[in-house]
Image 1 (tube, rainbow, N blue to C red):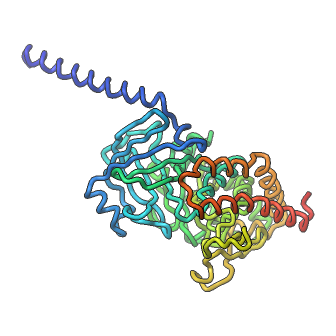
Image 2 (tube, rainbow, N blue to C red):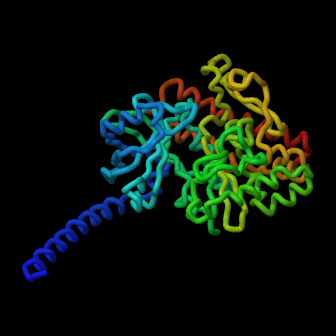
Image 3 (tube, rainbow, N blue to C red):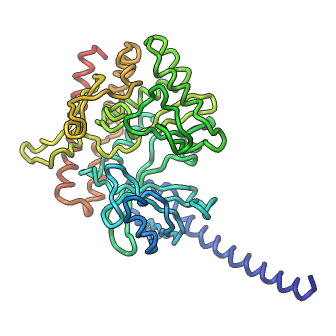
Length: 429
């Protein structure tokens, strides 16, 4: 390379570095005024604006491709600070709740998608925005995850955000912290091996450690690259299918944080999570294993909790006439749509939970945890937190939402009374 070429090249490199430094400086200045804590602060409402190109919008309006990531960009504003536009991968989320882009969809954002690998947003790889279309109160996820976390059951942080799509206001969304390796590293001090997402109505039955990363009854969301197998899951399944209660109980401690599992089920039952693991659909839960092969269970999809009864519209006579409850101590229960969906009145609950109810030491620990959850709801002033949140989001709540917010707040005391009656039956003091 001659001297002139070297000078030109040096100047070009210097110019690129100068522009790059300025870009990073600008990003740092913005980021210095916004943190993850702002995103997941339930005391404030942020704003999120998507720009979605036509080709991507067409894909997200197609039932077949709506859950496939496409190119988009996002700008996030919290108070006076704004970051963006940031290039992302974007897809829609939901199963029975899936709505297309031209409706009221929920979103999954991926900051390190495709060619953006390595990109982070305030340290995050992913974000989840729920439209709360199956939550008439708009409070369920906020309140339930607050209680899970208070009971030392690892669960998402939550926040609020108004969402715009190509300039069109889509209303208020719940910003739910996403389970991924970022989450795991922030919540666990030991090393994670796998993060599994359980698929509804499958459970830990023999043969269900099948498939690969994205196939089978359990999808591997994290850890497949380092450990491309489901051997740890197979060990958990082997224990889940032990017929001797005493042996099952002892072996469960070798493949799980047994106390954490029981606390998880206690909170699920207290908040009325019929769409969770200990419900009749064995749905909406994640399993995380560490390098010793020990599992914990984490909740998800808690939008239909706190007595939500979407089988009927809100009935003002009596004022709180739309409550839904299920038995907290029975191996089989129903749920609001069970007759229409399965032509049954009750179904088996998660098999680990059923085994727990069938073995006195486990059942006693579960009932004791129910007592602790009920007390914790009072200690953390859960109802007051709901009322504060209702005031914050009032401008985004229609009259039906507001009625549901009042019903939900009242439901907590009713559930506490049911727990107290149940404990009295079993002489748990």
